[in-house]
Length: 393
Ligand SMILES: [Zn+2]
Image (tube, rainbow, N blue to C red; front, side, top):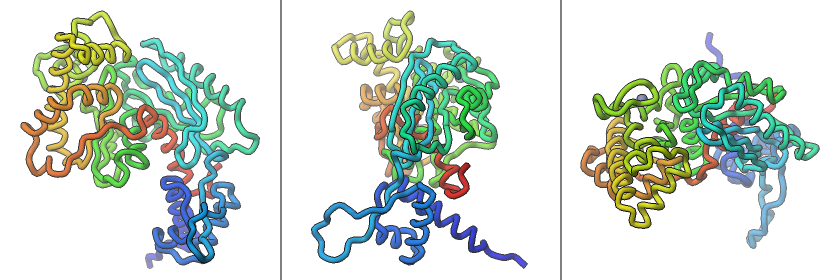
């Protein structure tokens, strides 16, 4: 005979649901929690007491409402005490942060990253940044996990970076390498930078409340984090979202993946710099200089931005037709390209998008800005905590 979930399983699920709510939405009254979670007041009281005893939430009086009657107690996440380490390995920079439960960045470090640094060279640099932050920890701080966002194809099961076309990495176990450098006794979870940025924007950013979202992240290459039906679309092995390698020009320019004519050879860093007559330059600052020059009337830069914008719109139209998202978010250098060439992008989208797919699609920049990969990396770690709040070791 099949039996339903045990009382203990139900309690753990409810603890996770309550903690998730205050993690995402911040301070919430007991009355709101009762309504939102569909549980009775005494259950909410007992769950809150358990989470407070575990040091994960704190209860207190609400801010003055001016309303008569006894105010409902407010439950807040222990944001300053409970935290995850988050790292972001980008083409030109390395970032490390301490992100509190509730999603606030509590501390951060940033380092330039000379291109071509191996995983073995990157790990001690990030570990050094984390150790600096560790020295400044409050005495009662509790680390519940660590996450890393990395430019590259990440195997879902174990976080192995199968290929980092812009980093030159092949089959790098960066989570394990970083974990042993850090000396933390929590697993270091790994995700693709676009995937975790999408996760963050969906949880608490521009796409909060949207169930179908595409987050495009660009630097040298271009990748997408895709939320479909409210869930992250990972594909079988974890490699979905490699939209930069859609072939759009047969026999086009050589791509870093080895193919020719991939979408990123028309909208990525090399394409923009080449079209602007700046083939010798590279890096994010050089890309931003093209947008500045276009703004200041440089005809060649304007043409480069228009061309890249047209290609961006072309690919976005295809993605909109395939995934029918309600929002497309432009992150990394795609944000700057979107802002500089919005007219080309919208025109191409209107031309190539299917009317039914265009009906409700909104184009946006990230609400979390450049912090989205860091906050998303921390969310990977918080997911473990939220799955079973009292079992975190
Ligand atoms: Zn390619």
